[in-house]
Image 1 (cartoon, rainbow, N blue to C red):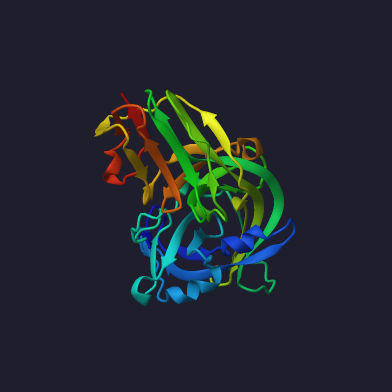
Image 2: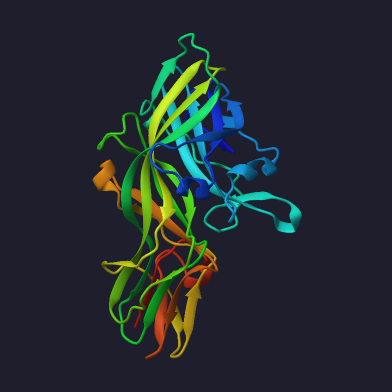
Length: 339
């Protein structure tokens, strides 16, 4: 893990949040610990490298589906920087490896940079002489209710096409995380993403002609109060984070305008195209939490064998087009059926 955008000679710690199934069971007032899994110090140019020597050590914070969520933290007596991201532990040939949470199979070689823009969004307090134990504690401060995020989208601008979306068991979504110094509406900033998965399977109603439909996935959302103490830097860091705790199920829909898509292939009458094992388009404001934070967060679903979109060309030969590449290329792209 490497990054930049920090001043020289700052401490950086990689924290692992508890496994998703642990967070799903929390109630208001419950506390859990965050696990430090790697540490480093930036060089004179602000560069740093974090290494995970033994992935087996992540077992206590890894969900049954392999998902694990990290937070990069760098704090001094005057400011703090933080950034969240998810990953997946896999065990090909008995050797554990860390890969992209969205299912693309890319090794997590470079984590997102710590953003200078989020400095001073949390509070730091210099040591006051009181003895305290090193580590981080997160307390579920407030249940922020149920909120919907975009899980996928299908579009047909023509007739003779049926299109659908399935959000299957263990389908993975990367959902935005919020960061605030005081936890008040309007003070929140975007702070990376976390990887969440469904505990069941949800199919959505098939759509027909001349329709662009977003399929919404509902999640339980919560505000956490996080406090960390580092005896090496004599700094106590406290902040609020807004995170997703669990999937609820249910079907929700949103009609939208047609997206642009010019990377086209022909599809004959009677053909079916199914997309999986790739990432859906990232919807930058696709997680509707503005009412409780003052901003919306991002949402992206990684298609897999359990989350997919499909197009059935039942009425006539048509074209299937991607917004960023050809439909079968596997990149993050929206798909549009055209005449």
